[in-house]
Amino acid sequence: MASRTKATSGKSGKTSKSGDQAASNGTGTSTGYSKDQLLEMYRQMYLIRQFEVACGENYARGLIRGFLHLYIGQEATGVGTIAPLNDDDYIVTHYRDHGHAIARGLDVNRSMAELFGRKTGLSKGKGGSMHLFDAAKKFMGGHAIVGGQLPLALGLAFSQKYLDTKGVTVCYFGDGSTNQGLYHETLNLAAVWKVPMLFVLENNGYGMGSAVERVRAGSPDFYTDVEKYGIEAAVVDGMDVIAVREATEQAVKRLRAGDGPLFIEAKTFRYVGHSYADGQKYRGSEEIDEWRKRDPVEVYPQMLVKRDIATQKEIDDLKAAVDEEVVAAVKFAEESPQPDPDELFDDIYA
Ligand SMILES: Cc1ncc(C[n+]2csc(CCOP(=O)(O)OP(=O)(O)O)c2C)c(N)n1
Ligand SMILES: [Mg+2]
Image 1 (cartoon, rainbow, N blue to C red):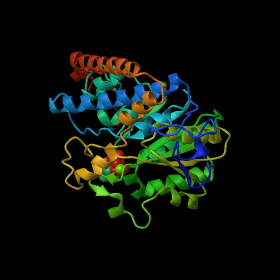
Image 2 (cartoon, rainbow, N blue to C red):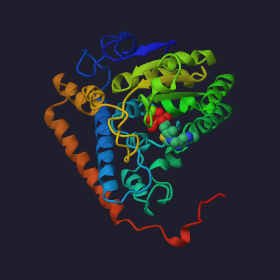
Image 3 (cartoon, protein in one colour):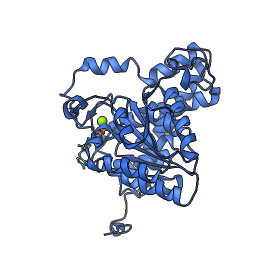
Image 4 (cartoon, rainbow, N blue to C red):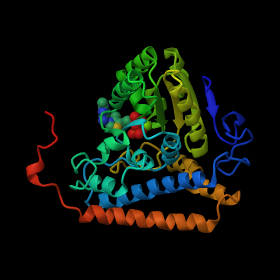
């Protein structure tokens, strides 16, 4: 991964596993991934999408409360970056965390129950949407403070280096968190300590209602800044799951070899509001429509069929199974008990 590498499968031969033009979004001829791997990436993206749609519906029903930030549109970034990881690698993320949790294989029923605030939830119903957590899967949250997850990830990556585990830590954050001082502090210390940390900037163009251009001086690109810290950075099309996976595979290989931290900026988009309550008055529908043309959950399966990698029936069967899984998760959550009032102060460290 060279500094300022632009990684887009089907456009850059450099990022293709097979050496020829990689396939994605209907272009190219070879992906270098097996059919099972390609279908699994679709299954995860579709599961995330359907899970999020169900969350929105159940928020409207009043069964999910508090803040709800959906990952709709960003699925390819989460799935493509998590696919290359081992069980020993840590993931630390922001409050828009459902997609990462699902891609990491956290229990879908218990994730939904957590959002419903039920006793069977991953955090016994006390964390909610922004705090999905599963230490056994090395999924260390779900954090609500913008950028707050960055120094936590740095600490985990430091431990991996100190204990020589050969693991890596992947930390997700949004464009908005780059305006926080701790973003710069974390980049600096990660470079000084040469920790195995992958910074994944999910640049969806907005921090709440503020477009990046309105709150950022200079270039709208972030990856070009990072070399000032001595960290190599790549930019990738975050709507292209294959390009994201390829870029991450290259990065993770280097992290395990002890090359120090690396950075990927994924250019992506959320099709929905910042949170469920956001009316999106700050942007026009044309912009959303334009990005919709590249919706990975729509375009990617079409590419698989068009290139005879999968049949339409295989795609339809997979969708039907996921639809059932999501219905079952909502049923599980709805039928789960509320936490007991006498548990209120359990697991509280203050
Ligand atoms: C320290 C801090 N300041 C402000 C907020 C309120 N807030 C919540 S989300 C958000 C925007 C963050 O945008 P970005 O990092 O781009 O992530 P995205 O929501 O686009 O995924 C803000 C300002 C917060 N949670 N924490
Ligand atoms: Mg953002």
